[in-house]
Length: 305
Length: 224
Image (tube, rainbow over all chains, first blue to last red; front, side, top):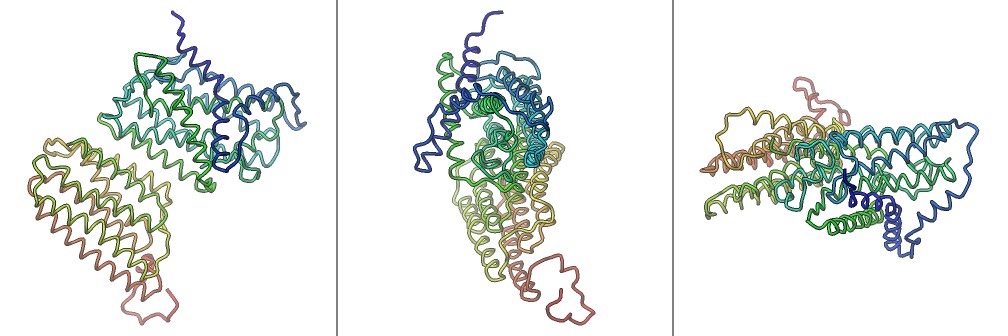
């Protein structure tokens, strides 16, 4: 087995560049608000600062609360390895790895919720209940979108699915690709707690979802949570970019460049959406999610068998 | 050519879902009008041979009716009958949206079993037009206001019209004009009916129509 250098470079890029995307989003939002904005590398500084601090644990918490950040970060880190970037096969590719991907996210979310409940804070409990409610609707949409792509490409491995696409496939398979990309984009917003669903800047605990669930985490634990969120952003973004901008040339560095530009553009898009769209009322979120689910179902059916 | 028919069908399906999930009456009317324009233009796209004057005439009449006159009439009905701006569904929007995908699945199954002659554009044309018909029926059944029932009827008619255009490529004129006339009269009559229901009862809630009784004297004002 030869060493897959390009794959290793992609994984290294994921681990190093993921927090940078949040800097881009913040800069875009600052631009829209007429501010100068935080430094682009702010999240790196935050993570390093938090890693040097000690953690404070409430007396009501148990080992679950201490274990959760590690479990979440490791689950997301494994998912970084099984997602293909820029059309290049993933380091860990096997039949059915899309199920593993969905359940790695499921595992991370489960411990996210457990840790939030473990603190005994009623606000965190509310956040946990919302998280659970929305993920019940987001998970089938995610599965169906991937299943539609799997049916289209006749492959049940993420690497197989994504290496099938090229810019030329848009002219033939555009209906399925559009629908699946739209569904994945909605799931991207939900899973990363970005604006139409959740507002990362909110300061009102009653309306928070993700932000409220990490209120009790401090020090290295919070750093793990933040870094895990950044990696998740990268992984789901890669799934979206892999469909929308499937650059497959002979030159790996060109594909890599297109992929990175796509990720940058996606961050800008997130920033723009966050600047011009109001977040949905909590009651309307399930409707957005069922729309994503409906699009994914259509994507599954709108193809020649 | 069949590629562009697929584009039309794709947009029509998406618009069906949009009608099912949008909560504003005005949005629904715009969506139905857009769908009508697409369906009207379909007769130009389906044709393989040269586009004749007759075809352009058919398309122009269909687009004018579905895209301009029907929406005008409906907006006029909203203004005059002072209809509220929301749709008032009996079934919630998420469930309606999912029902829309279910209809598409059912239509796929039906069209796979229909003995339809082989044709070049029938990729998704038959399931999409079928599902439009089902979505139209669903809107008629699950929305409270009389106006939304007209909208459901229009969606249903769009489906039938598209079905006719795609299947009867050769000589659809008579069928189409007959249908258009029917719909025109129907929308006209429905507009009048909406206006009258509204004048009689101060609202256009069709639930209460079942309480209409002939043999008893009129209820006192303010009830119903």
